[in-house]
Image 1 (spheres, rainbow, N blue to C red):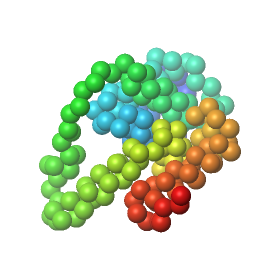
Image 2 (cartoon, rainbow, N blue to C red):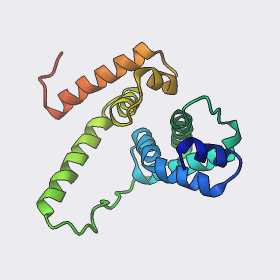
Image 3 (cartoon, helix red, strand yellow):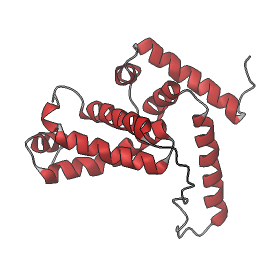
Image 4 (cartoon, rainbow, N blue to C red):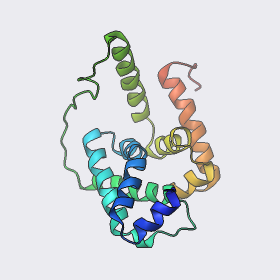
Length: 179
């Protein structure tokens, strides 16, 4: 079944069709919520809230608009709402690959270190630049779509992506600092 067919069936209340949409978009929604919250546990909670809201308000979806953009807006709102509500609590999550059966612990460690370094560098960016960069470079949205999702002009989205990339290169030491 195609995604437009799944969307239409889900809009009409088909839970199985909606479940298939959730499965296909879970990674995307989690990446967005993690970009905003920078806490895997909170991000997973926000992703769950986003899917719940999408189901609850499924009849409001306009089939003339891209489903992915509609879902992204819901996910961003869920993450921002959770950030406003959450109390201060800092925990160290267990690495996702802790139980991995990888044959090469060196490669796993290198990937974990690179991920930690990139996460730390992304955390130094202002939220809007971080979101613009992830939406554009990771999720493949156009500058116009990024602007629409973030409520800014397309040119501002383009500028945010440019400045985020430049700042990341500086933070990661892949380019001389421009001051």
